[in-house]
Length: 211
Image (cartoon, rainbow, N blue to C red; front, side, top):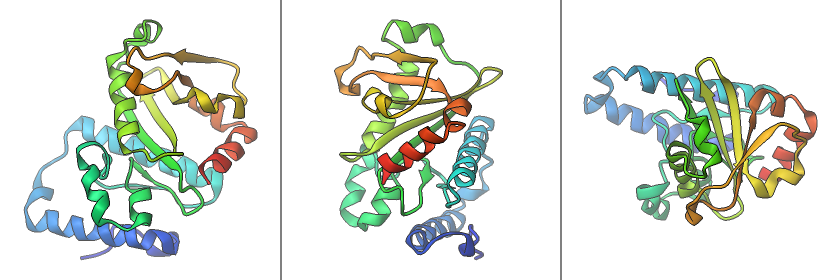
């Protein structure tokens, strides 16, 4: 069974993750799971995860990769799996993107959809965004930088992060979303992804916060 990834392109820290992914991929084939054709929405989401990983890899000149079958392997109802995994494995199986060694506090979810109820951001009761935030926080460990990378048809790409990090970044245009549910933490900042990543101060500070 060939490796899913080119091992020459990832650091030693990620070899453990690659081995885990390859094992599960092989098991899926043996069980016939891989025979199922993914839904268009699933394929769309996977493509967006790859795009985000590729963009971050270009910015930082380090390897970020999408987790095949991603979806917080150790988050939410799967949190018990942390008891059986190595600390390094836990750190990089929390969300949709496997970060390099220099980003141990990086925790990200990627969402790509046709529509988004923007008007609900101003009521504090946006069920869609609340669900995504919950996914992100369920997988998070204390001290993590929790990020939502979002893409919507004909609207663009956006980034959401907790308001507690806002002072570290240079952003002029953004929406501050305050969820009604206290379990979702404080306000979340939603801003244009391309603009955010295009400012060196932001990418440098993101690296520092995730280190």
